[in-house]
Image 1 (tube, rainbow, N blue to C red):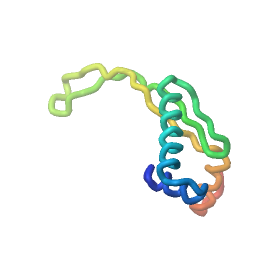
Image 2 (image 1 turned 60 degrees about the horizontal axis):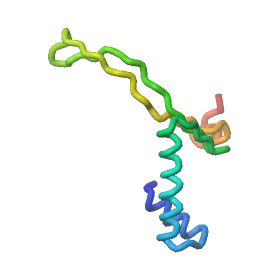
Image 3 (image 1 turned 90 degrees about the vertical axis):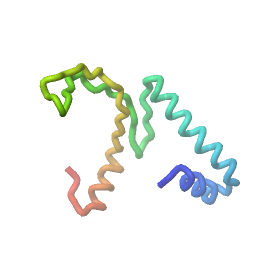
Image 4 (image 1 turned 135 degrees about the vertical axis):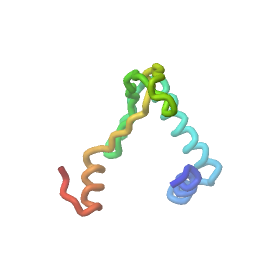
Length: 99
């Protein structure tokens, strides 16, 4: 699903004009991006949560010359964790028992 599909669905469902629905979607994603950039955790009940996790610094290798190593610094990663309710729904949809 793309951003424009979300916008159009929001417009249809809520009876908004597409430009107004686009403003709502743009603002929603802008708020999420700003919060994550500032290091805040985002939690939407019964959906999931986003937070920043950092990868560990490590040594990288040149595939053409494996003896040459270089430091790879720690990097921020955005981590998403679905809610338990949604996770159980996904497991059921796949025909599996919840763990």
